[in-house]
Length: 246
Image (tube, rainbow, N blue to C red; front, side):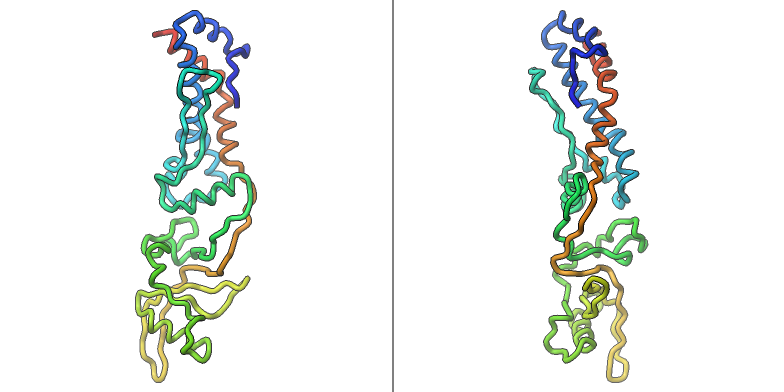
């Protein structure tokens, strides 16, 4: 939304500021844009919008991850405040990358591994992935049973891969489920049982190479900015009063 300092709602304060030192009107405009931008991200409207659109697995994700590029300088025609999301202060840049697609809709690539309930805190879909199950922490411990050339069938490949990974290791099973996905398991225990093995395995990820996910547009950032900008005239008058009081 654009702040028009010649609108009827704000023109009285604009004229008063123009009669003062030349710094006061630009200062009021700049402070207005920045206050509205902050209200649209860190304070109110973004938090309300995203609470309706997203399951928030990381506490304060949007408050911490939202970012404002503040208006600067003294040239009113060049002033602008830009709102968005930044991956500098939140866990996992993939989450921020995904939000860019969810704003306008599109395809999210790089989703070969999708965490299941077993990978999440309290085994809940609404919680974050446990630290010990993050891909960055386990990727060097993963064994793909399907690529085990020593096994003559799927079961042998699974058993040999589980033995190789060991307790606490991770194995991608050979069996395929819906859509051609397989399951990544954590090996919890291994016991010799007669001529075979008893294997305790905990499912943590759905795996399918090259998978992408199609998402619908949410426009969460645009809606948040629009809500915050509804009071832009009121905010300008407030900032103008501050300048007049100086």
